[in-house]
Image (cartoon, rainbow, N blue to C red; front, top):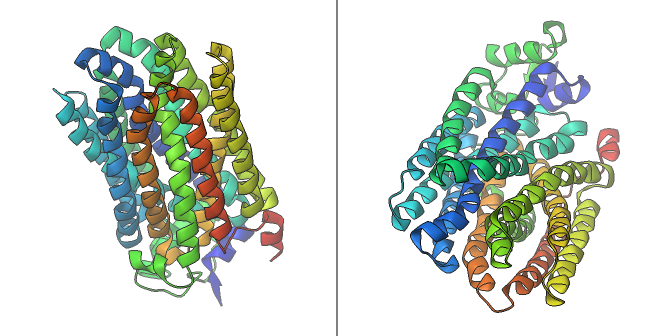
Length: 443
């Protein structure tokens, strides 16, 4: 009797191989997050060393985000064709080498070009890591597992901010990129040794092959392997256009809006917090501490967001997180209009913002992983995340322009609150939300 792969994974206990997939994909996202945010930590020093204005630094910050916007859908489509594992490994090699090259940038033009090239690798990694993890996890653990993986982004930023506090004064801003790039190359080697391919991808490409049987035996024990395993859905040739089929179009539109807003806000904080705080007269160590706390509390937010949608379902969970984020952004903007806030007030506000913004991102990736089928899961995540990168690109340019205004710091937070309302619209457009885990398991 044929058994669907989803039924096999859902009925078994969480095994060591599945935990290994979670650990390795999370490690990949941590290093990805470190390298993405390196420009933010180096930004204040680059401004001073090269005599640039905030607006002139904007294209260098935007370059990686533009690369990510291109790399996410391309990498997602590639993952659906050649495999999630190979695409993840190639992405790590690619962004690692490009980040090392960035350390030797002689001028702003070279910095912009090399950050764009790095962004191609950054963008390709995340949709494939999300799809691979989602396809190895049982339904009851999928949202929390993706939440754990997504916290790699703030962990990478947190580690980067902490390292930058001593690395930049001692060795200069170029050392941040050099360290991040070497980590990317080492990561590729670790992944090549330990990361397995998605069972669902292998079944769709090869059928119930010895490779699939071997991975099932490693995961659950040889005596637990069914005689014949089949894919969950009807096999179809993978193609990015799949995400625009009538049954997926509302999911794609809604998630694209929500990702656009979330990534615009996320990277506005990632890229401009140190510069914003130094422009308010705070020393560099306090500015880097603000970035550190934003990322640190993002860990709790990503985990809490994953638990929330597992408990309440994605629609209610996302709307609750968004409501909290809008309130926090509005409160921070109001506080700044009443006078220069204390360092403590800014750290507390950034901590709350980090919690909610990272929670929103974890929820969105979890929803995207459950809303698309195997045939277009990597492509679907890649397309909506790629469109979302347009928001992060806009924030790179607009952040510098807004902070250059006389009341730029207050306007910054007002704009953040307004952009988050767009995410509310996107969540309401999506017509295939993840139900609470208990209801999904009962179904």
